[in-house]
Length: 245
Image: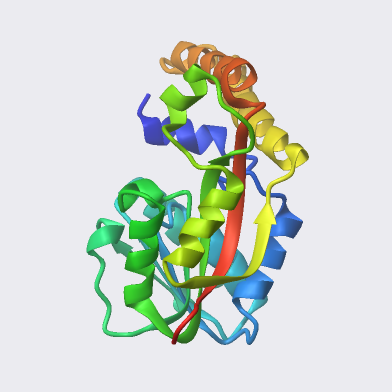
């Protein structure tokens, strides 16, 4: 099975693909889209769940998403059609770091896609290029909530703590106007949903050629989480405005 196939199964019951409850997603979108008629861009949109939720509740909204995965974008197109928002959604298949648009956006989203740009600050630099005056950025970033184990560092790299992460953002010329730090419940719910969905699929499809791999992946990922990073990993979403317009 490919990584995309495994990811699709693992996120079947948690399509936002981040450790956030639905209410937290809704509030972040509310703070990022105060008018409801904005133009929104998601850099590294995947299956475009952030955009789909924004479009469903804001009939004047228009959105664009960028991702390299045709599989994810195809799923996004089907979902947009099923949810009746496809006429207001444009999807681009290309590296998010290479995307160029002649139009500016009122909200730029990039949650869980910093690897596509080389880190947090390069992601913010890319977002700035697309941002309209007085626009906002919604970005999600991992951090160490407490001292990590060597195994956790091997998996996620040299993350900063929460305070240092925010300090870096502020020093780069941004002002947080809202934020959400994922709770232990949200973090746990995300991990249990991912690896539980994957394991359940494997058990329900024992004759599928990918069943053994799926179950092995679920078992390994659950063990890495419980024994490696559960006690140290944190996730924050920040709604930002430029300090100087």
